[in-house]
Length: 378
Ligand SMILES: Cc1cc2nc3c(=O)[nH]c(=O)nc-3n(C[C@H](O)[C@H](O)[C@H](O)COP(=O)(O)OP(=O)(O)OC[C@H]3O[C@@H](n4cnc5c(N)ncnc54)[C@H](O)[C@@H]3O)c2cc1C
Image 1: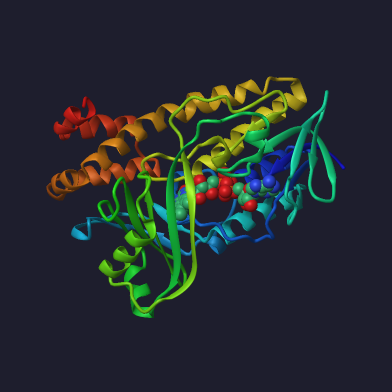
Image 2: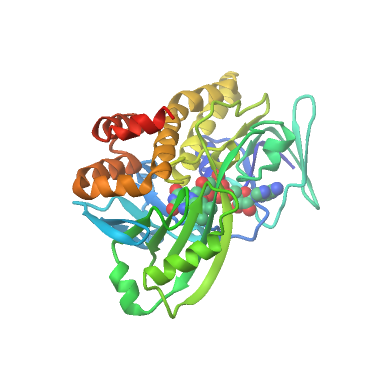
């Protein structure tokens, strides 16, 4: 079967690229290896900046909680509580959110094949041939939205130097009063694991609790066990437990070829400080679809995609990466300082939800906490 564009992967990057292409009248196919809806190990937190990319949709049915309280702690001690005027993060379950986006793509004309793993890709003179176990599909352009272990990136020899954090998460059914205590509130602990953090995210009827770290050789399972005990999450029923790498951005890389583009995790576009990836998956999908439309309609170069991502996302990732380096070098000291200067954490939260840039946050932290400058130069 022949299409204009084939997208590999039905996560937020793939579904949103397909939605934008199909809306512009492009004949697009998504190939997804899993059955849909599919589980994805993810906190499912979407920030205000993410919502602003999805204003054309009513997200009510996929939002499980609205967060206006953030509690920071260091190794379970000295909690600092921020109460915000409005919700700035929204909780979702990824199976529902991703399927919602896939349905939106279908509604505007995208074709979706689930249980259809792409096994091989061959570039011919004027087309790309995509093989699954049972079928051959062809297209003018292929989009790799197939996540961190991207087959598409591998076949096109793109993004060969990804940097990762690794995260491990459990979905837990807890007692009603423990769930009620967590309503509208997320907990973040820097210190429970080296070079990373733990989180508790409330969902409609469970908690997503996880740990992520840059450090190799650390046991995320053990850290999570300790975190659960420390946060008095006991007597739960475990629904899921899964680990997954988070590919962090911060390096300018080539993200396209003459007939291929990479989006989302496949392109290594998650925030180095927070691990947030859904925003960047959606945003890169939107930029990719605009560049593809321009290519198919007016012959514009696909190279514009790499240029736009490297201009718009990478500089902020570089600052976020520097901030994460500082945070994870001295989380205890930073926590102590912010106990007395809570407003610094408010600035941090603003940068994460999109009301402030990481460049500004970096300047603020360095001018307010002078020893960070010393650390930076070590
Ligand atoms: C534990 C954890 C917690 C996280 N928490 C958050 C959070 O709270 N907020 C946030 O914004 N981000 C979070 N992230 C990051 C976020 O999950 C990712 O950045 C995001 O999923 C990237 O979306 P994507 O569409 O690029 O890739 P994915 O969501 O990984 O989707 C890729 C899809 O491609 C499919 N696929 C792969 N190979 C093939 C193939 N050969 N053929 C067909 N299909 C294929 C996969 O089955 C999958 O459905 C977290 C990550 C982890 C690991």
